[in-house]
Length: 157
Image (cartoon, rainbow, N blue to C red; front, side, top):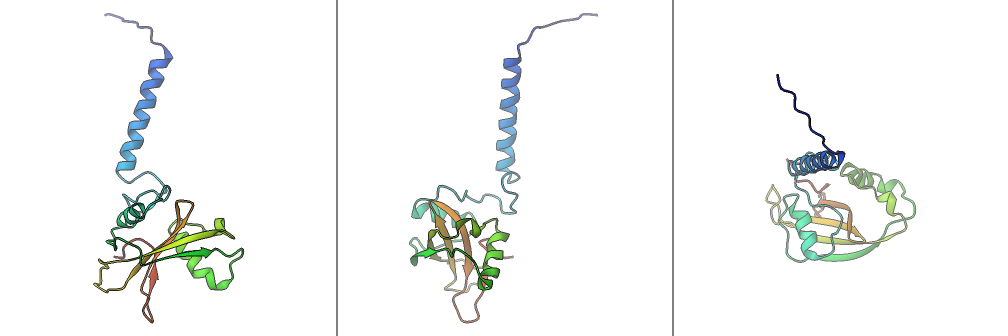
């Protein structure tokens, strides 16, 4: 029987362990298992959304094909307090991981894009993004028609 002993310093072992942890994290993120626990994989980060191209890429990460330019850009003031009329909209945003109450009293921009690939084939459907300091803080997809609908950014179905 042979016994081999080796003296190994902690530094290389910690470096290998750290590298393994990074590789596992990257693999989990690539598989869509990391992050905020959303069911949508491949969604672009809501932070660092500075340009029109960034906004389009964010919407495309949800599967939407949109016009190359927004149909409207509005500056909105998030109210200091929300009354009952905002309840459903706040719930919609919360279901997507957005908390508009963090932005009470802040001025935000709403960028609206026309969607060209809505699953029903309906035209005129719009995707809206609420942006505060280059961060998406809310979003929705809606039909502006009388009796229309509104839902989160995720593609239905």
